[in-house]
Length: 245
Length: 384
Ligand SMILES: Nc1ncnc2c1ncn2[C@@H]1O[C@H](COP(=O)(O)OP(=O)(O)OP(=O)(O)O)[C@@H](O)[C@H]1O
Ligand SMILES: [Mg+2]
Image (cartoon, rainbow over all chains, first blue to last red; front, side):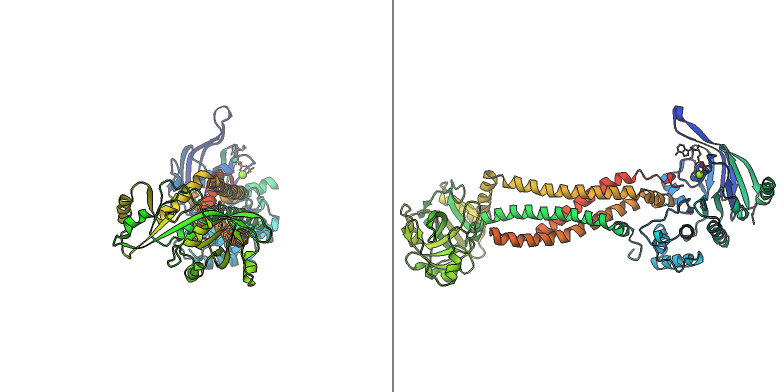
């Protein structure tokens, strides 16, 4: 699945990051180095507070890089302008822990509104694509429901549809299954994986959910702000099953 | 663009109560502004109803003219000096004087403004006046003001029933022969119109040779401003010669100076503006606050600050229109009610409507712009 010959789609080296200033300054990330290849599904795991979300927001261009090199989808984030970060974010599909859908819109409108970021897509085509992807995530019948009328799993499926409808070049997800029960979580992850595979989209997903590790091509583990291992999924699974055995 | 999701509107109408409150706030503000400006304008307009109706391009008045009720007559011989000018079509002398009207039903005395005019030439441009001029030629005949305030007695009702109305005016029995419209104003509760001859009979202290106004009607195509300067030179400094607009302006100037109504009603208008501003600001601000996580999400996904600003400003403009339309309708109803109660010439004027619409949009966009400051606190890094 992984093509090690192509240039990585995300690559970082020497990333250090701290919150706060002066006395209160607290370093969160230490000399992080990693890469994601095109089409790869990568899980980012590790204990709470280890810096996973912080790393994800750096990759997404939501925080300013303080030290090191970070290249995402061809953008060098060291010293990048606001406009460049914005352009980068438009190429990313985001999935949040809480669905973060707009409550005053229907499921369809929530997906359709993403085309306001892509004026080159006509409104008619935007609608058509939104309808199609909602059908793919199994919400063809509920497209015109407001978010409050959908279950947690259905909401997260709308969020998946919203993240993918504009064909992002990478999907970043932070614990997308945390608020869901096992079955719904599984369903959402499967959808995400199959949609991403279909379009050869890489996924970087932070998760605590050991039940979904099987979708990963690779698992990166963080501890105290450092990457402690970066393993091909097969080795990792063996290791994990070894632990759980 | 038309088929894209109208996010601003959908977000605005999501909470019906809040939308209702905001629209009501704008509406109240619009009604207040209409009322204040309308009353101000109507009060001023009523003060110059006579001035605006004089049937000529130029008016000669005494140099010391202050306002309608404080005036000095001037010699009508002055007017002869310009009668010969080829540009002059006609000159109409007008007398005016406040008189005492004795209410025929109650015997109460009340001041009424009397105008004495030529009966062969319509010196004042009022509907139906020209047809009734011949009636005024009868001794002691007068026309009564349909828009007079109550207090002179049930004149209109009784006259309509065919009753002969013969009140004592300045202790002289007069006969009502017809109706006209001049309207009440600050200083005047009602008017009557009589002939020159009857005027002089009514007001013994006045003489034929001294008039209050000389209305000059020019031949078509005459250059008003040039003739004004020319005549002023001929007439000398005892009198002023004004265009009709200047004549109105002279009267308004007095009322602006003499009464605080300009300030009162302008302040009232600002209060209306401010109320709307506060309500819209409050509501947009809480709205932005409640939707802050959604705005942060949109920012994270790549929506620009400009896009979100436009969303909030679009909402302001929606509120402006949603409040303006019913506010204007309510103001229209109130105008109708007040018009019959006060006889003030209240009108929903189109130009004032445009002005108020602009003020409403301004009010809402200022509120929106201030509420936008809250939007800056939406940090997209907080969404994960
Ligand atoms: N905005 C912030 N300001 C200051 N410190 C922060 C901020 N956000 C996170 N931190 C701190 O940074 C550290 C790493 O946080 P981060 O959210 O990256 O952890 P995480 O690995 O995602 O944890 P979890 O699995 O619980 O989500 C934590 O100690 C946290 O307290
Ligand atoms: Mg986290």
